[in-house]
Each structure stands twice: as C-alpha cells, then as structure tokens.
Length: 506
Ligand SMILES: Cc1cc2nc3c(=O)[nH]c(=O)nc-3n(C[C@H](O)[C@H](O)[C@H](O)COP(=O)(O)OP(=O)(O)OC[C@H]3O[C@@H](n4cnc5c(N)ncnc54)[C@H](O)[C@@H]3O)c2cc1C
Image (cartoon, rainbow, N blue to C red; front, side):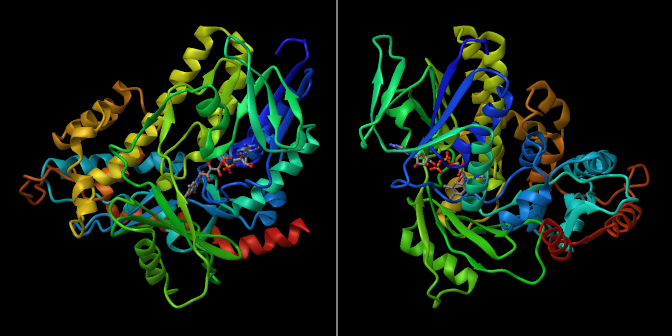
C-alpha cells in the first residue's frame, strides 16, 4: 500500500466481512487506509457455521486475542477433529476420525501408511486411522487439547463457536482497530465506463465512494455476481447437497472436543458441541428429499420429534466464482463461493482469501498478472477442498437410498486430480508421492487422505485377503496404543478446562 490515502468499502457484516476488516485494518494500520464496513440489519447474516479448522487459532494469535478473552464470549469449545460415522458400511470401518495433524502425529504416520499399504496389497492387517493418532483418544475421552506443562507436544486444534456471538465479537474488535461501521441496504452499484465500481447507493439515500470494494454480501453476491457479472462455476454435478436444516439441542455435562458427522438418508448431519447447547444440522440434497422430510429425519435422530424447538431451513449455492478479484473488487466469503460444510473450511477460505490479497496487493498492486495469480491460487484452494469432500461420497459404501447409490456412481464427474489419487490408491501405489506430484499436499495432507480412504475401509475390491506372513513387516499396534494412552493422561476434560477458563476470564 503506497502512502497515498485509500478508501476501502466492505459490503457485508457477516463473519467474512468482519474477519476481512480485521485482517486489512491490522495489516495496514500504519498506512493511510480508511476501511468502512456497510451492512444491512434488515437482511441480517446467515448465522450458521459453527466449526473451524486450526486456521482460526492462527487468526486470533495474529490479532493478539487470547482464547481466554474470546472463547467464553462466544460459548466456544475446542475441536480436535471430526468423527465420520455411518458413511461406510464396511465391517470394522463404520466410523473413523479425521484429526488435525500435528508433530506427534508425524511419528506414527509412517506406520499408518505402511499398514494401509499392506492392506491395499491384500495383507490382512489392521489399518484403521484411529489406532495411530492421539486426537481420536482426546476426542473419545472429551479432553481439551491443551496439555499439562510437562507434555512437550501441543496438539493442533480448531474450535466450535456460536457464529452470531463470534460476529459481534469480531465487529467490536474491528471497530477498535479503526474500521468504520455503517448501516444501509445497497440498492444501486454505480460503475464507471471501464466497469470499475465507483460508489454504492443505499435505500436510505446515502452514497458511499471508495477506491476498492470487498464483496462480503453472502449468497446474494451483490457486487461481484450481480453488478460485475463475474460467472459462477457450480459444483452441483459432483456435490449434490444444496440445502440444510438446523436445530439446536441441549448440551451435555461432558463437552465433546470433536464434531460428529453422521451419514443420513440423503446427506449427513453435524453435531457441534458449544458450552451452552449443541448445534445440529442436516445437509441434504433437495433432489432426493423435501425440506419437511429432512426436518423429520433430523428431529427423529435427535429425539426431538415432538419437541417445540424451531428449525431453520437454508438453501446453499455450492461452487465458486471464476474470479475472486476482478477490476477494483474482491469477493470474500459466501459471495465468492461455498463448499458444503463437511470439513468446516469456509472460514479458512475467508482467511486465506483476505491474507493472500493483502500480500498480493503489496507486491503488485492492481496489475493483471497479480490478479490472475491470485485468482488461480484461490481457485486451487476451492478445487482442492472440493475434491477431498467429493472423496467422502465416492468412498461411501451405503446402498440404503438412491442418493448414496448416485453419489458413489458419479465417478464420471470426478476431477482428473481425484481420479488419479483413487487410481494410485487402488493400484497399491505410493499416495504420498502422487499428492506431492500433483502439488496438493497444501490443501489436504497425506495423513488426511489416508484417514479418508483407509478410515472408510475403501480398499481394492477384488482383493482376497491373506494372513500376514513372517516376511511381512508388521506394526506393533499394542506399543503405539500404550504410548498414545500415556500421552492422553496429560490432558484435562474439556468441561473442566473451559470452566476454569471462564472463571479466569472474568
Ligand atoms: C448450512 C451451513 C453450515 C455451515 N457450516 C460452517 C462451518 O461449520 N464452518 C465454517 O467455517 N463455515 C460454515 N458455513 C459457512 C459460514 O456460515 C459462512 O462462511 C460465514 O458465516 C460467512 O458468511 P458471510 O459473511 O460470507 O455471509 P453472511 O453471513 O450471509 O453475511 C452477508 C452480509 O451481507 C449483508 N448484505 C447482503 N446484501 C446486502 C445489501 N444489499 N446491502 C447491505 N448489506 C447487504 C448482510 O446484511 C450481511 O451482513 C456454513 C454455511 C452453511 C450454509
């Protein structure tokens, strides 16, 4: 950013808008940059999205905000990963845990890869991811991933939080960083002859000028899609889910430190533990079931069929913009695209999009080349994450509904990248090498891919398993199990830890 003063307007005060405002305000705090965030309380925010990846931890660290400060205010809990339940019907593989990788995991990852490799070669050895990592143990015992002082490894973790409270928290922090806050509903986007946005006009009669605009207007895509007409690439040919229904339920005395993702008849449901309630939601395809059917199925699963707890129904637009930075506008959050929340990646993408933009802008300002490189990078993230999510459906073995049959048989719409990954896996090849060759380990690591494929029991079909022979180098699972058990003794129950945290924050 040069010394010349700049005006940036962010349209939208959801999590995307306020996170972007904070990242920009913090980055350019010593520069002559005026940041204004405009939002409409009539429209409101989407108000769902309660799980994160470890990237949120980095966000708060960079902003200098401690867990003790923000977590109690947002009813937040720790998340060490996700259990996927009932996605697979394969014996021994009906449930598996996807951890957030950290240094200790790297110690046993080679043993896991080796066992999975043997299993793919047809040797009957245990190759379930839960046996090799610490996080599933922490999750199983509802432990907070903050170790006692004498334990030298710190697990990687994300969080669960109340998204409305988080939005308010971020708003207050951004305002303290100097971000101006305006209320108004945009009714007209004024553009110059070159197509650049010059100002926004509101229904309330205000005109807001800026040099640069950030579209955080959610699924309505007011600036990028509607005004600048940037095309949207839908992912609906390989991700069928386009709707969700959310219903809260009571919390439990033990607070789980994981998200639970359970497969349902026409999609899957999340269970996200907060300190005061559980967030639940069923993500489904409206082509296979109606909103009413989805609500009944979710209520039944939660034991809330006859309870008067209100349900929220939402529509989802799944895919991404062709360009995320176009002319003098950047789209961040749901306005730039969305992939169903199976791995809770949306806020990670918000952070990436905002942080990479400030870097890119510093390097090359508005050059075409700079914009193209930025757009290619963000598209890479969207596609890398999409493929990993698609992998969950392709590897499922449920046959109870047409939905699951269609998901598994939808191989023709798979990307080349995913197709190669599955070929290498099925042919007993080296998966790590393939992911490195494709340069996609930055989206999901070899540990994540092994967890997905081995965890669902997706091993070559034609295999006739043979018992391990004396020459097969087997992993000593008993030793690993004992080691992980001893590690887990260094952590406290999450309920106890969060209670203490709340007391100390007062
Ligand atoms: C079912 C579901 C589950 C999800 N789960 C997760 C999850 O677990 N983890 C995760 O990271 N993400 C999740 N997400 C995504 C997450 O909810 C969003 O990424 C996040 O809330 C950010 O949304 P946003 O700020 O882009 O949009 P919104 O919250 O919709 O905000 C849009 C803003 O734009 C403003 N606006 C719109 N039009 C105008 C206008 N004309 N004039 C003025 N203002 C306007 C609105 O007032 C609002 O302030 C989920 C999404 C869905 C649908």
